[in-house]
Image (cartoon, rainbow, N blue to C red; front, top):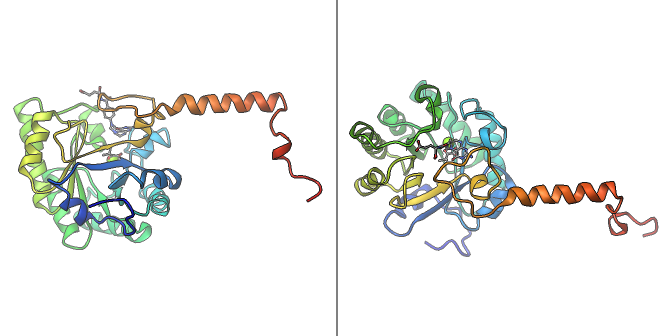
Length: 273
Ligand SMILES: Nc1nc(=O)c2c([nH]1)NC[C@@H]1CN(c3ccc(C(=O)N[C@@H](CCC(=O)O)C(=O)O)cc3)CN21
Ligand SMILES: CC(C)C(=O)C(=O)O
Ligand SMILES: [Mg+2]
């Protein structure tokens, strides 16, 4: 499937069908202008709950609300016209019951117009994934390192080195795939486990810190743009260094305001038209 000259938005079914064709390109997007730029180059845009840390300075993703996700989902949908857009279900909006998950996923679909939702979890969430997919909600799974579990896991640590950890991730991936998810994020997982999962499940794996063996890749856009520098996990590569660009622009602006060289004559409304 070519994305050049594409007029219709990519569907979750098309993302699913890309397994075995070419690597799936995905990034996070939280706002209209960034979504507009990334839309040209991505198969899928994720409105990730990482926005709590990246945009709002929260210490984890646990405090992110459904209202925040819907507002940013609406912004991204206004900017992206071709990419498949998926919105993260935030912590507390789906874990209580499959009914709660459906109610909140339906709100996201109705209020943003996006293609589907993502939720974190393995075997314990399989029933919920089946409930949603059977009722018209495309689900993007997320296994391995699950940031919403920070309060029980104690930190963001890569997984899959011990047989016990590897077995757990393999069982989680299988359960979510068999429950009907259209694709699966595999986060912070060692390469042999990510490769095995990719080869054994029918849906595409989208890796973040899970090696090139996955069917696609995702990164937080602010990370790969060099704009978010509070921490830099090993899996992050800066494809640009925007932080110094922004800083230098602010510095130049401050100098010109203080020197009264900005605004110049060309920025001032003329008295006579
Ligand atoms: N900006 C941003 N980028 C992300 O990738 C991201 C977020 N925010 N917020 C939600 C979660 C949190 N994530 C994180 C955060 C930190 C590490 C980290 O510091 N990892 C260390 C240790 C890994 C290990 O144990 O081997 C690393 O060096 O990568 C990993 C994932 C991924 N997600
Ligand atoms: C890193 C991706 C997979 C995510 O869940 C997020 O940005 O919230
Ligand atoms: Mg997330």
